[in-house]
Every structure is written in C-alpha cells, then in structure tokens.
Amino acid sequence: MTAMVEVEGLAKTFTLHNQGGVRLPVLAGFDLAVAAGECVALHGPSGIGKSTVLRCIYGNYRADRGRILVRHGGGSVDMAAAHPRGILAVRRETLGHVSQFLRVIPRVAAEDAVAEPLRLRGTDPQEARQAARAMLRRLNIPAALHRLAPATFSGGEQQRVNLARVFVADYPVLLLDEPTASLDRENREAAIALIREAAGRGAAIVGIFHDAEVRAAVATRTVPLTAAREAA
Amino acid sequence: MPPGAPPLLSARGVTKFYDAIPGCRDVSFDIWPGEVLGIVGESGSGKTTMLNCISARLEPTSGTVEYATRHDGPADIYRMSEPVRRLLMRTDWGFVHQNPQEGLRMGVSAGANIGERLMAVGARHYGNIREAAADWLDKVEMDTGRMDDLPFTFSGGMQQRLQIARNLVTAPRIVFMDEPTGGLDVSVQARLLDLLRGLVADLGLAAVIVTHDLAVARLLSHRLLVMRRGKVVESGLTDQVLDDPEHPYSQLLVSSVLHP
Image (cartoon, rainbow over all chains, first blue to last red; front, side, top):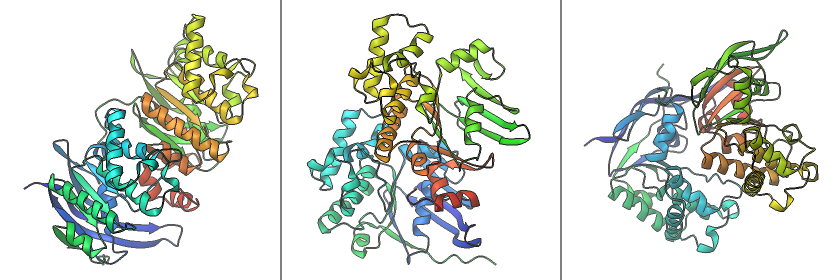
C-alpha cells in the first residue's frame, strides 16, 4: 500500500521578529503517512499545531525541516522543497484544502467561486458551472443564492461554499480543517456524506474534526499531536 | 527545482543607482507565461524603479533582463536594436500606469486610444480597427456608445479600464502594471480587480504588478516579491509570504494591514 502523503521529520517554528523575536516551536519532527482511502484525524488541544500540519502539507506554511511527499501525476513532489509553480500544479490537480475561512472575492458569484478549481484545470465553463451548482445544491445552498457573491452569506453558508469548492474537484488528497464547524445538523450530515464518499473513491484525507460525532463518522484512524518542545 | 519550460522574462542582478542613491539592488527573478508576479513593499522601496528596469523603460546600472522573443529565443532587452525593442513595447508588452493619463492620449477619443496601438503594428482597415476597439471596450465593461468620447470625459475608473484595453488589444504576452488600482474608490477597485483577474486568466497573460496593497497582491498574483530599500527581502508563493512571512519586514508589513 503506497502512501499518498508521507510526512517525515516535519519541524516548524514561528519566529515573531516584531514581538521581541519570540520563538514558537510548533512541530519538532512530526511523522505521518496516509494511504488512499484513509481518513486520518489529527487530534490534540487547540494551538498544538494541527492546522500547521495541514498548512505545511498544502505548502501554505514553509517547513523548517523534513519532507512532505505527496503523490502527484505518477510521481511524488516534496511540498517542503518544491518550486512555487510545482506547488501550484499539485494544488490544481491533487490537493484540496478546506480552510476555516472562505476568502471571498468581491463580485464573484458563489457558483463561479465553486467552479474555479475545475476552470483552472481547463474544464469547459458550462460544465464546470453545472458541477458547481450541483455541489452547492448537495450542500443545501438554494439556487437563488448561486448567482450571488458570498460576501453577504451567513457563516454557515460561507463554510458550505468553501466545502463545495473543494469537493467539486475530486482531489486525490484532501486536507480538511474543521470542515463542519458552524454547520447545523442537516449540513453536517451532508458534509459527512461527502467526506465518506471521497474516502470511498480512494481519496487520502487528513482532517481536524473537533466534533467527536463527526470524527467517529469519518475517521479511519486518529493521530495524536503532542507539544513540540525544543530539543535542548 | 525550476520546472522545464523556459521563462518568459529573466531578471538577473538588476541594479539601478540614481547618482549615488540606489533605486533597486541586485534583483533577480524569472517569470513564466501565464504567471502573475506581485511586487509589494512600502513607498520608496524601489518597486517602480525595478518595474521600469525590467520593462525596457529605464536602463539598469548593472544586471541583465532577458526576454524570450517569439522567433529568436531569449534576448537581452537592453542589447537589442532600438526598432526591435520599440516593436516589442508596442506588441508583446503592455504597461499600465497608476495614473491613466500617463498611459492614454488625452487628446484623442477612446476608440482612437485603442486603435492607435493596433495601427502601430500595421492595422489599416478602419472598420476592423473600430470593431476591435468596440470589442475591447466591451471586454473592459465600458459602454461602446462612448467610443468617440475623449478620455477626460470619463471617470478615473473608466480611464483605467480604457488604459487596460489599449494595452491588451495587441494581445501582449506580458503586462507590467504600476499600482493599477491605486487612485480608485474601493468599489471601483473591486470591479477593476475582478476584471483584471479574469483577463489575465482567460488570456494566459504573464503580468508583473507593483502594489502596496496586500489584498490586491493576494487576489491577483501567484508569487510575491517583498522589497525593502531597493532589495528583495523575501519571495515565494503569495499565500506563503502573506500567511507565513519570515523576514522581519514582511512580518511587519502583513501585521500592519487590517485585512490582508
């Protein structure tokens, strides 16, 4: 069984230069391997570095040390060392990341925001928009809202647009940072169904699920994170 | 691991001194087709000097700028003949100024502003030129009925869109933009940003965008260079630089914004 994601010896310390040079060691030698079809839940108290792990895998945070191998296009790419254009190619085809916030773009309609990942891969605009609408409907966003920019949507609606943007694109690897936060029961069920379907089609999933019920419903394995103390 | 395809433009060690005062120092980067590079930093950090150096508008004191020409491969833009460089500036490259009045001919109509660049590359058929002008006015969301009006009758946002249309009508491969949303109202800015984002993506343009606005940089650019006192202090993927800035100056810049 080959790992879709393989993290080895990941270390990350934040240095706050403008706050007295405070150093915040978050990860010190973190390892993780995730196979296709697995859904691994990162577990641990707030501030322990769970989101940092996801962001490092996505190439959003830069690793200080370690390797982050992601299977991509028949090979593997080390996200900790790849050129920015290489990282963008992995994100376009392979890696989907649900962050805790939707970054809305003024004037861009919800359905266009959701269609964007498909458009970036060269999907026909009409087809991409149809897929986007279908995904928005699955997440209970009424058709009347599809043409509107999500800036005025409620928190829960924005979160569902965020989910739709990622689940529309069938990524082989999914990074889910609190995907069900601020969702009501009905929508939480819809999100759980999408996550399970993704795992069922062979996606490798790493997630942070604070809600124990959601975690129990989707996770195939839990990986605890412990505080990184500086080795000194 | 730089990917296989050759870059469209390569700057190496670009340095510009104004007498003894450094404008930009030792700036190096590559830009590939379809890629948008954002240049951020405070006023006086050398952003505009650098942009002028790489766009054949200001010869650097030292360093080279190579451009991948369509037919003859990479060529140093300051070693090519003047006519060749002029032709590139009129066809392959676009330059969008912060102040649209610097990039427009204020004494001729909107349509003529767009048509002029086409005529500079040999278009002569009046009907075709007018049609192309109308098409571009439409693409930048301007009323084609205003085609025969002079630019000074337009608002700042409309003038900026006209300047963009004038630049894009020759289907350039790279566009240099100096604070393109600079002097505009926030609502006009949002519309222009959305327009630029769409055009850059649809046309597969490469672009270098100088801005002091990190939100603009995040929205438009794939990669960022952070400049301070003429030097590049940090570079990387846009979201890396904005979400995980490493250099003290980048951290200060990001933490000083209300909503980056």
